[in-house]
Image (cartoon, rainbow, N blue to C red):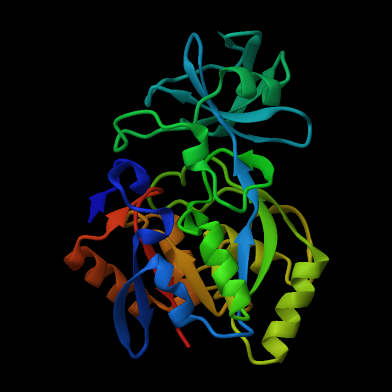
Length: 310
């Protein structure tokens, strides 16, 4: 596959105009995201992540990626450029204030740190969206928000929801498709190949849990928009929140989610095991092989996939 290097709007394609591969046991269909209504039914429930993306990268003495805040007020951070090593007690000058590395959070990659200033204010004044090398230029924070963004806290965009437009959501609701939110704040990109995802802060409203139960009882399907939604719903099927360390995969398949809207993840990423936990290894493998053959675009500005295993 090919990495998406810019938002689709930058080359004249609407958010909901990106390509969408629909994978079902009966076969694969190539469509566009704006065609989503063709593949959903009245009474289906689409669950979305309403976490908003922070401008989580700050350039100071070093570049710091702010990943998530911990219960004791400290932050999990990543130092950049890649390969930058820190030591406990090291202080790093920020545009205002300082950051002190306290202890490794993921050895060699992430640190627990204390910051001398209010981090949300720091990010609002000096932050920019986290950008990786496959995206050559900086894009504004608005390009990293979904139409569902409400509760700021994600270091990186919950990107499965990016192709939704207000017009598409309105059309789906008018056709009888239900929507409900969860909140899961994503940290920095999944860690090294083969490593499980880190714990993440989340909340499933009781109203969403109730809609999930009603949908399943009435024969509708629960469609999760992204791996974040899947992880949250499977962690708290009756509602609730806190931190989830749930790792979905062959040993722990999905029990709540019937279908999944997702972007395209790099081979070896922990997200792939979660896709397989929902749709099965065979269907996911078929989808990836066909997407690669057809040149679908990867990553947060890329194309989409709808997995419907049943």
